[in-house]
Structure formats: structure tokens, C-alpha cells
Image 1 (cartoon, rainbow, N blue to C red):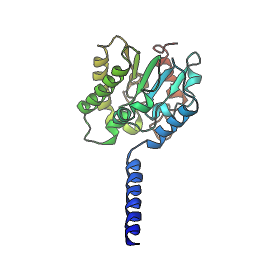
Image 2 (cartoon, rainbow, N blue to C red):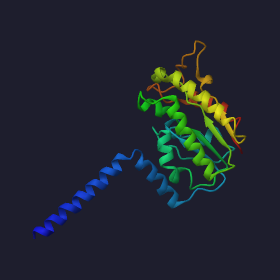
Image 3 (cartoon, rainbow, N blue to C red):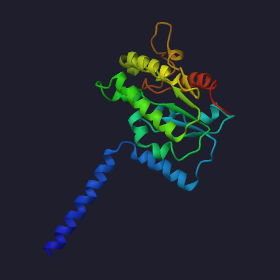
Image 4 (tube, one colour):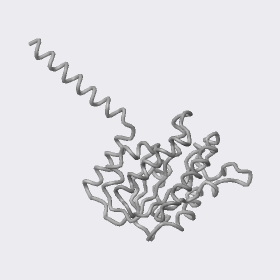
Length: 221
């Protein structure tokens, strides 16, 4: 009887550890939801694969902005470059995209004051190399980190990281740096006020209209 009780305690402990380990993995549920969708109907090849964080996640009507394109949105809100690297087998590698569009990096800085431009660059280069290891010639578009009223204190780091990423991508003829940062500023250099939701972080339709104009030059039909 005592042995049975001990075994039950061990099983309960292991189950608790398993649940806790899953809870510690950020965005686990969001990624599993993508996998569930894919199991029901796997996405067709040749689409534009949008990956990254909440600015893409919340662009629910992105297909309406680009009616001549087929878009597969696999962004998950709040994600960092580290998260994209971790979940590359779930949200990047399974597909056969015509083009990959990335918006990520902003949350890396927001996660901690200790995150430097150099750290973000190393993360970006790691993600880039992992993507290129799988898709050697698929065109890439990196959308610059955006300025926002709620993260004014991070704008100098965003600007410098954007600059370094652009220089890095210039070495790849099949990669494009899409600058939305400068298009979202007022004449005095501060973020526009009327293109954001009430959280002063995520964009409204006016903000996405700016992105539409920038990305429209680079997306492949």
C-alpha cells in the first residue's frame, strides 16, 4: 500500500513538472494553435510567410491590404527573436513560402534594460542564418522596428539596431530592409500620435496604411 502511494506521489510530481515546464515556455499555446490549424488543412506552397511579433499578429485584415497576394500569417504576439529561433520548426520550417516577411526585435529591447543593440544583432544574425540554412534563395523582407509613444525611451536603440540590420542585409541580394520607422515620425522626430491604438504601442488602420505603402513596393505576387 505504501509503495502504491509513493508511486502515485511520483507520478503526480512528474506531471506537475511537465505542466510547469510547458507554462514556462512563452507562446506555447499560440504555436500549438498553428500546428492544430496545419493538421486540419496544411497551407498551400508559394505564399508570403509573415513571421514575428504582435504588430503582425494584430494585422488581422492584412490580406485585405494586399488582395493580389496570398499571405500566411504565423506571427505570435509579444514574441522576440529568441522566440522565433526557438519555434522555427513550427512557424518557419514547415512551409514552402515564396517570400518571408519578418517583423521582430522590438520586444527584445522591451523585455529588459540589459538588452543591448549588440545582443539583438547577434540574435538577428542567428535567426537569419537559420532561415538561410533552410531556405537558401527565398527572398526575405525585414520590416524595421517601429517607433511608438509608449516606447520612446527605446527609440535610439531601435534606430541603431535598424541601421545595423540594414547594413547586414545589404550583403544578401535576396534580402530587403523595409523602413517603416522613418515613415511613422512627425517632423520633430517623435512618433505620430494618430496612428496608434489607445495602448500607444499597437497600430490602428492609419498605421497599417503606412506599412501597406512601404511593403507594397517589396512583396512578390
